[in-house]
Length: 168
Image 1 (cartoon, rainbow, N blue to C red):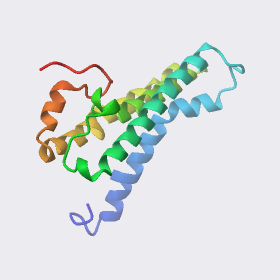
Image 2: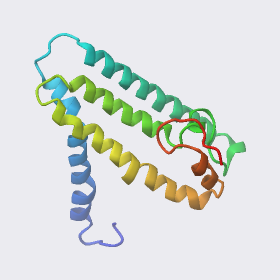
Image 3: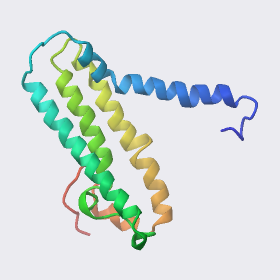
Image 4: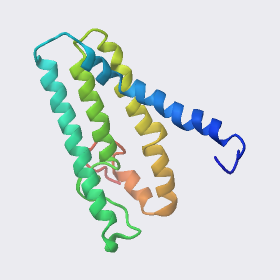
């Protein structure tokens, strides 16, 4: 970006990078913002428990997947290989799935508060971003080029939701 527009880099980066990310952050965190600011309900209700379980499941999936990936990447014996062990056996992107679940959990907690249903935009947007924009799509295009065996991994392994392997 800096090389393509050296004179206007500051204004282009302001809008394309910082303001765009700020706008996305506001929209994605809308469930949390509305939920935190709500006065009612003032006691824990069933959606709080369900939402917490969904959030916690996502947190555990994302954390475990990230730890597994970190260990895999930092093992010299795995250089150039495809991560297809642990949670990665069932999903090509279990960490992204966990991230998405966390936002769905927050949305479920926010559902009963005023305007809670309107905050469905939060988990929908983050799930869309992870699947179609910055997550799966972006990462997989480079992995196909770098690791030819990734194509077989794609054929047998769910992209997002952890599922049993498909048979070839």
